[in-house]
Length: 195
Image 1 (cartoon, rainbow, N blue to C red):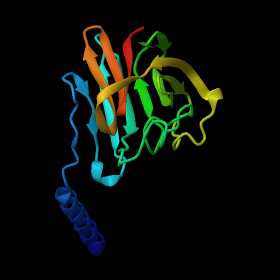
Image 2: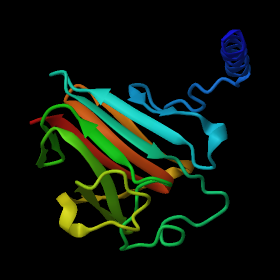
Image 3: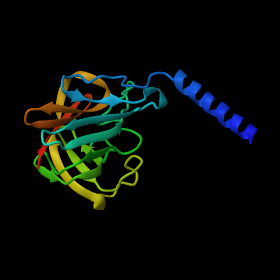
Image 4: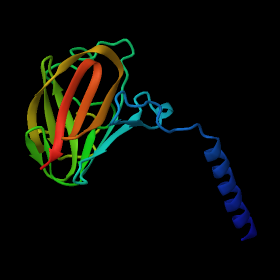
């Protein structure tokens, strides 16, 4: 019994020491504009680190997006690595997921509270936004259109600045929130307001 207790204490001490020696894994990137939230955690564990964007509407509705943030690394992204006209996981690794705590209007579309996989179909001038009910997917390899809860199109714009990392941010505005998807020289923005 003494040996078991000593072993447990030693193991806990070693675990605390290793944890204390870990590098700081707080946000490594900050939002580009005031009022936007995007936290990247922890970047050293994956080539495309997990990230979270979140915001709260005036009525208290909370919106959170969890995604993985790939980098350009010299590659052509849209029309290349991410083909036009094909379903994309909207990031890397696991499919991106969006959680909302009360009904919202996403663009002109009502979305009920819940968690959804967020897929997109990029094209040069517009993207199709897809909320899908099948959670926990790896990429879009098992994506099934029959699980779609919502599909709609939004315009895509070109940015003057090149964005090395794919980023999702949520900007707070007086009228509500705006969800931004940005990578390479492309930006897609979706207004969010209470339903």
